[in-house]
Image 1 (tube, rainbow, N blue to C red):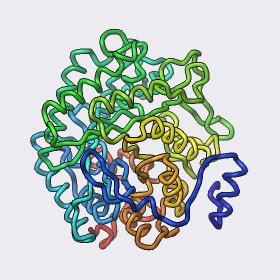
Image 2: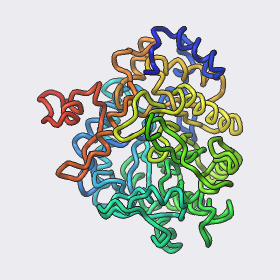
Image 3: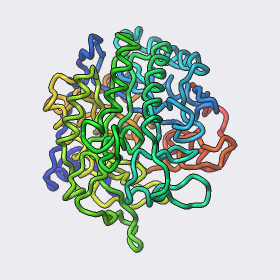
Length: 476
């Protein structure tokens, strides 16, 4: 166990011993302050990250549990609700219960937005200072029906299953997404964004993180043609999509993007200790975005900062900074106490991972001081995460602090923080990975188990144990 701290002082002592730059502020002032984003005033500096529930209907429309989760977020007090990954085409879904926006589901998405905002008004009186967005995605090599690769990368291909049930991985003969397919896909993103505007979302996020298709294109140095090789080519996809959305939707939508500024390399469990170890990779390593080619265990922010500059010039007003890939190196993106089933023990103290998140986010914010930057990596700090958010905002290291796993466990964290000046230790996320375990379960009539917080939500605890959920646990 890593998290054994009985007080904030113990935690701060450990941080100092490790020479890390994580600072806390006890008095919550900066997180309360409004902030202007593209002409809209956000009521506070707290947000909710896009965390999938894997609970959509087969046609991609929000399911009953989707509504339950979003209503809780709406009444939870955070003023930025960054809606979860939503596919723009059927073959781009990560699982058969991922959200998918199209003409047949847009009415259900409108109801989802309406109920989320209604929950906010019922709790706080109005919703004029609330932003609700939707993350648009294509899952690429992690598409559940069949991997769709942006590029061939031997290290990654050796760990990408074909999806045919044989356990075989893709090889050099596996087709990559063609240029014509990517051109059509750009149009699908634009069409999905227009539908999101019709549904009432305030912004759309073009997802460029965690190894999915748009993120993989950023690292496609081996790819030939207009979408690979040079930095200009590797950013063509996102530039075309943003230009298309601006042309089609005008001022109806704010533009956003969640970006992995450091991909890193895959890790596997040591055969004896089960601690994560990096897989051997050829040097220079060219298959990771924001990754130092000569030392891929470290970041190189040159291209990520150039990308953010392109995003800003293209009209993006919100950038959500994240790291790593949950399939290859989960300790990078989600510092944890316990690995998910089949995973590896963390090869570093989680505080090192938290510090990496804060440090790289601060680098983006300081290069773009006028940009609304959303920070990640807070959940492992448990009840003191809100005081770290205060410290980062006060020091100009981030504009908005958001929780992902932490918000699933504790959807009204912002209301408690701003109302009581602190979080309840018996409600915070424990980062023990049960939500991921549920996400990876396929033994369900719809081919995908819904996911939520097992330690904090009795409904999902029953699902995890293989029981029918108890009455009264499926409330609003």
